[in-house]
Length: 614
Image 1 (spheres, one colour):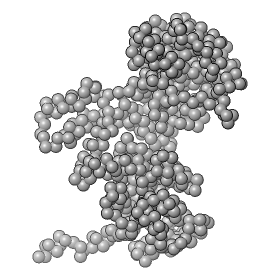
Image 2 (tube, one colour):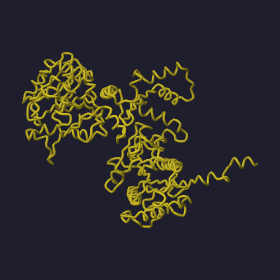
Image 3 (cartoon, one colour):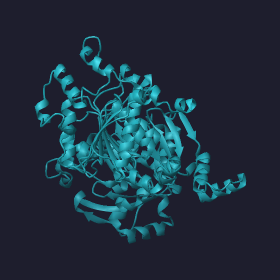
Image 4 (spheres, helix red, strand yellow):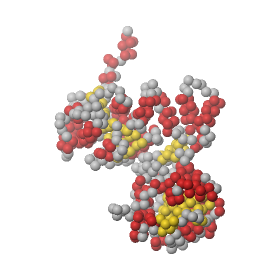
């Protein structure tokens, strides 16, 4: 948005970073670098320079806040910035830390307000050359206008005094709090607490603040910064272009909004006022009824009794604000769901007796890694459907192609999407509360440790379905060293491979079929050697006649070995059954097992036919 009355044309973008900030670390990092560079001011404030020479301004308040970045031209560099924090992060406010909890509460009491209506604006930074052009005025007006729009009664903040910053804020209706002026080493100047009451207007800039307040919804280019490219300086695209890029790009994580939190209500409102929602699915009423019935399945409720139970469950909350809303940026769908525990209780209700509630909770606490997301995607989706695993780590470097669609569940609009991205989307559409990580670069020597250990979140079980012999062996070497069980479905004759490295730390890889061969020995294989090695891994004498006949034709009359959707679907079921047994500590030993449908559906296995002849 531009203000025609400004001495210069300013392009200001606004975005909100969720309070947990998952997936926004890069964006927050760029914002911090921008602030630190301006605050450092060529050495004037040396505390913003780290020992390694980097410029740092890391603050927890960046998560859960609104951020505003200003440029002179749409494609120009950022020249200024300001942050607006909402009541949900009030415990972290700079002014609260500056004053201490007791003094902070006294300041609010003197103003006659509760913490839930207090916003804080901070980190107003402007490049030296832009200060005389009025950019600081507009950034300040933007933050104050946004706070007015979002329902603030009080704005509070710290202000330096060396360059007259406190007097500058006074022109917007801020007044200093007596007795709060003190020297702060980091800023190399005296700092004072300022307070602004929205009901008293914005002094000489009242009209400008009102303008920005009215235009705040239009200013919000996207929620959560999801549209921001690798260059933080990029300006908002037209919404139609942004929607197309979002749907066809590499986004894969939904955004969750819980209206019980003030900052989520703010972000949710901004999303609804944008053009980024294509469909709204609100079935919370029927979900609540299912929840009530699942808790008392023996009872037959009347309509009045159900209505009373729903009212009791809501406990005073409006139906629209109960639970969470999941926005899926790749489709634009906005979906209302129950709170996490209630959602999962209802979604897995039909698992009971086969998987009891305590077992369900144990399974949801486990993390499963999947390598290779053609065949592996069937396993991952089936695992998620059954509630086997509440966290997943997915690795695949490949993109969906048309020839993959004979066995991989996807639509033609997904062609060209990364397989890891596609699988993550499908998992989140089953359960938006899952914890999913992806390695779209696939599993390599460089990503091996990240995949298996993931910092403080190691995987509990590996599903290995990749096509590269080196990775198949290297992954098993790593799994064996860490004591992680490995499952592999070969989508031919229903062959399931189980290696219990958690119970047998010295077990030979692939049951010793390759002898003492190490992954390091498999680099640079020819196509023929690769095919021969894969045959040795799966046991050439036991594969189906059709697959045996296909191998000599690969690269001649066939582009690759044949695979069928039915075989892949069966593999997903077999992997899930074995994974569930392993993770629950039930009997499931190492070995190879065949569930050959060609044999199981043979005429001599027809029990109905035998019964008819008796």
